Every structure is written in C-alpha cells, then in structure tokens.
Amino acid sequence: MPFNYDQDFKHLNLREQPELYRVGKGEQGVLLVEPYKSEILPHWRFRTPEVARESSEQIYALFEAYLRQEDFVGADMARKFLQMGYTRARRYANHRGGKKYDGPVPDDKKGQSGAHGRAELPRAPEDPEKAAAARIFKQKWDEARQHPDYVRQKSAFEARYGK
Image 1: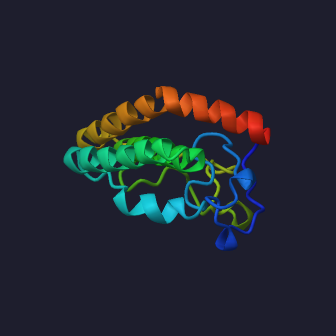
Image 2 (image 1 turned 90 degrees about the vertical axis):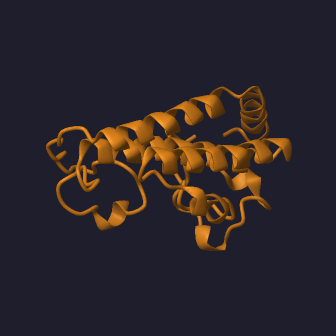
C-alpha cells in the first residue's frame, strides 16, 4: 500500500499506533514519522566517508535495537534513513550542491520525493568523497533489507495490518 501522506503526523506517535504506519516505497515518510524521525535524524550525516561510516553504524545500531524490541516501524524507519543516506550522498556526488531538479518543489508536493514535472539538472563530475559516503550507506542499507529479523517482522507486519 502507498504511504499515507494525509495523516496528521504532527500529532501521531506511530510507536503507540503502528497500525497507522504504511511502509510505502523507498524513503516515503522518512522525515514525518514520529517518534522515530526525532530519534534517528540526529545521527544522519554523510559529508565525508568517515562521517558516513559513523552515521551509518549509529543508525544500524538503532535498527538492530528496534528489531530486538520487535518494533518493526522503528526498524523500517532506520532502514529508510540508511537508504536516504545512500540516495542523498549519491545526489551530492552527481550534483554539486545537491540540487537535482530545476525549480522549486510544487507546494502540493512538499515533503514528497520526485521530480514533480521538473527537469533534471546536468550532472557535475562525480565527487569521489560523496560517492564513497554513498557506498558506505549502501552497504548498511543492504544489510538492513536482508536482515532475517527485519524480513520476518516486515512479513508479520504486512500480514497483521495488510500493508
């Protein structure tokens, strides 16, 4: 099921109401779902490979802690932050300054990823430091997606909530 952007995320605690969570695609909702956003975001950095390594390890440790607590929503949010570390570092590796699309995000699409009809800007020569940071996050993201407890909990979550 698609991620539901219409929920009142400012007033929702999805640890208390996991039935309202939808996995969606990719990173959908990564900067909305509380309390996880506030728990994970302070650790999310990708400026250099060293910073990316520390960040990805901290987020992966949170991922494992959520799994131990049988908190699938938290684990999935940590997985999304690892994915976002990869995608954002790749964006900065390809586009100096991180701006991928021409023009502003349409008002009705703010908070959602995608081009939304905007043209992609030309790529700059690859930034090797950001590319290395992306590889670090990609490795941790792959580990998270394939983690046996994550796979089991995701399947159980989808079976329980139909999402």
